[in-house]
Amino acid sequence: MNDESKRKKLLDRIPHPLALLFFIVVAASVLTYIIPAGSYDRETVDDATRTIPGSFEYGAGNPVGIMDLFTAIPEGFQEMADIVFITFAAAMMFGLLEKTGMLENTVGTLIRKIGMKRRFLIVVIMTFVYGFFGIFVGLENNIALIPIAVLLSVSIGGDAMLGAGIGIGGVLVGFGLSPFNPYTVGVGHRIAELPLFSGWFFRSVLVALVLSVLAYYNVRYFKRILKDEKNSLAHDIETGDMQLTQPLGSYRMRKKDIAMLFVFILGFAVMLTGIFTQGWYINEVAAIFLMIGIVCGIIAGMNSSQIADTFSKALEPSALAAILIGVAMATQVVMNQGNISDTIAYVLTSVLEHSPTTLAAVFMTISQSIINILIPSGSGQALVTLPIMIPVGDMLDITRQTAILAFQIGDGITNLFSPTLGGLMAMLGLCKVPYGRWLRYIVPFVIIALFISWFALVISVLVNWGGSI
Image (cartoon, rainbow, N blue to C red; front, side, top):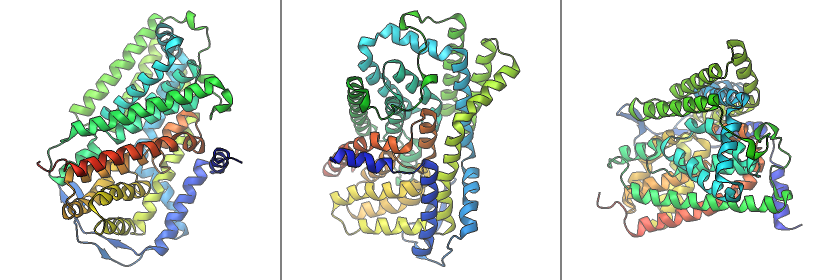
């Protein structure tokens, strides 16, 4: 058996995502009996609570029992209620757009005009489009756009996995390495007392480079499955509701399709305006999705009962994704109950103090990757770890700009495969792509992206990037 077959066999043994997440929650509860409890003191600065460097102290343990383990799951749902609902809202909106035929006609017309001969170019362009949305719109706000990538992929001869690579991969790379990410770079710059989003050019070059590699990676996979469909990682995934049903040359935009597309674009324009000028977040975005769905249903000539029925049927495929989001959050709930989150952060950052400068910068990303799986919130991680990492970096002559980049890389790249990231699980659910299959697709790219990012990190150390700020 060759290495590729062994790797496939191993990844095929990964349990169902729901079972996998439950095992992770159980493992976290077991760790509360093994890892000593401890905590940092906190302070509130600009309405944000963050750790105070050098204040860590071990304390009395609070191991998580069986009852606490299972109550952590509903508590996880409560913590992630907004993410769960935006998943439902996105599913309802796209379920209606699919039912009316608007989505199929729009994609079919787009492909007809560009031409199947340029389908590789379509993959490249759409990878960057989704990357752009990740950079400027965020993670959860883009959940609604993921089904379009799958429909587009299947329509040009690809599969659900290619659609996931374009949509999920593009959004997560763009969001994770965004020079304007408010949850990682923004919070980090505030903690480090640096100008907001300074160093954007260096970060822009990095995210553009990694997106370019992702586009090549997606095209390479596309060519492999076109050459032999046995190479498809999604050959048995039912995509009957995600493909064109008519000959390509027959697609035209009807008047009501144009009207619904206008409402869709207008809705997203309003959403972006609200995000950037009014501080809108997930609840407001979910409300926009619902309004788009209802208005498009009215344009399509549906009555209230038909719209409600379409919404309810669209919720069925997204139910699992919503469950996964809540269970994923239970890991953090358990660790907080057991008071071991700060201990893990303390141990990982303590290692940095005894490492050479360049190696310490790289290890910052590795330690942050570990923490990211346990604390999937980017801003939450920043408030816990950066007040510790930045002073350590100062002692090692690592600039604060570089320390934040190391944090961003560790958090951002890990998002591509972290099972505790609710947004990722929601997107995979909408794509109908099993988590184990996604790992087979994305892990090789993650390794490449990490080495590219580490190379950029080493350069930032060698040139003392941001040292004059």
